[in-house]
Length: 80
Image (cartoon, rainbow, N blue to C red; front, side, top):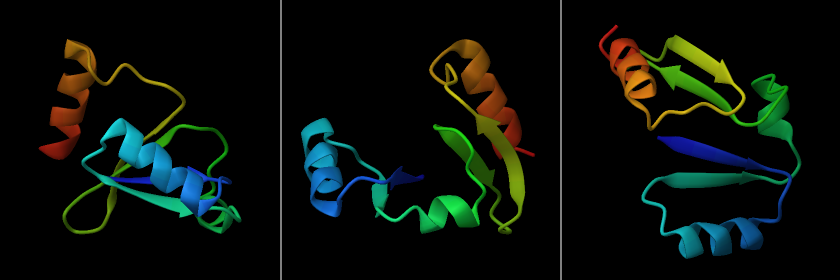
């Protein structure tokens, strides 16, 4: 899993990651260049990429990933 923080300074992102004790990588995108390259129109935007590097799924906006339905959807996409 990889997260990209849009528009905030690198130091602020690093502080937030430490405070939240996140176990995944969060990359800063202070200029928005990555967001533009991936055509992000809303946050959060989730891209699920298969082992072969192909896009398997995309979700725009907040989702309840921690519910039974959300977990089932992720499992189905991962096993695709």
